[in-house]
Image (cartoon, rainbow, N blue to C red; front, side, top):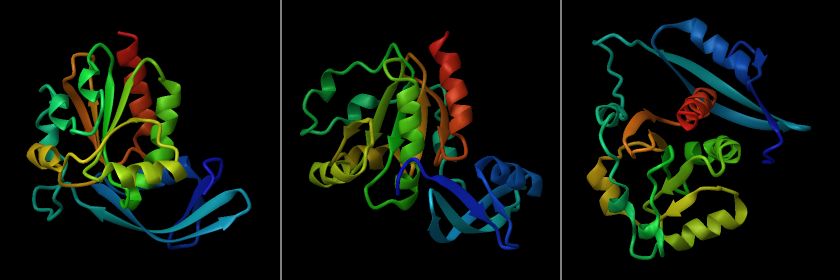
Length: 211
């Protein structure tokens, strides 16, 4: 799929919406957590149309929904241990100082559909803030598989591979997970996929860069 294609969303009653209309529609449904499941995808000229099913998870304490990112949101204000994610074959990575600039840390793997879906949005952020923000992608995948993936798909982050022990120690339970760090390397915010949040994340990065 070309990155130039525009994605539209078709809901169960047949209505088709662009990204912003879809986000507005979801916000109108409930104050709970609105989830959507992709049922099918079709291409039409320069567009991609995803047929989706919407569900709402209530945000009250009796909900059965488990937020896999909450444990990491409790780390807000703490230092992110970047040095623990340097694998033996990541030549030179241990010499990189990620402090002094805001940093986006992305946890992903090559067979993760939602991870792949958000890559164009991550690349947009990298292009917008190139030189002003650090962009780091971390995976348990072997470097061979990551390099083969990168031959097909542009993912313009620094890549740290083969670090499953460190990932497990940090308690990563769901993918993708994106962590925003400030210039001191401390956790500011934690996101799941950033397809919905990328505009807010862009605004947060601009504020941090200008501090």
